[in-house]
Image 1: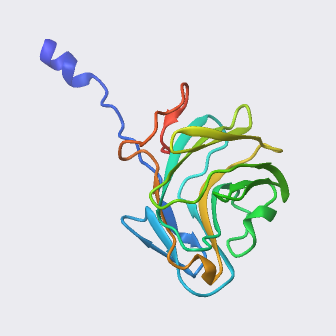
Image 2: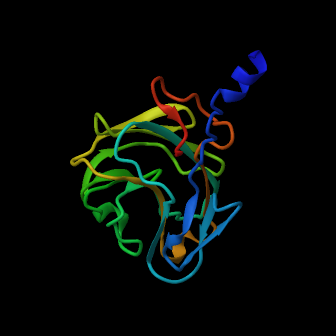
Length: 195
């Protein structure tokens, strides 16, 4: 009887973690490492790639490691909507939030915060997105350096973008939770970006 009862217990459904989407990227982007690593190739000035999953509610945490950093990297990391162009300046996304490490954070084409975090090879950036409170907190190697309020509700995707050939030599690897995080996940946030 006990064996039969145990057999009827539901099995937990494994999480399906996001990756970068090979079907939702600019042509001048190369993906590798199971679609978790991206680097720019020559071509169009601006190029971006979105993740495979979008979210419109909940609290989610993910990270991005700067594997390689060009002399003038021009990297953009953060969130975008499905309507955001993959070949336009990410700071003009509407609505969206982007972060260029070592530069500024943008909100609807308006600079909303600046920070002194420098683009350093092997630096890890953390993103804590609260879609219920409509905020995005940004971390650099464990330290919180920006908190941004989103203008509108909507479905958002993590993304990575680069600018022109100036970013040649730059490379980013995202971690959506399939492997351990570098930083502690903020309290109350889902540890990863998954279904």
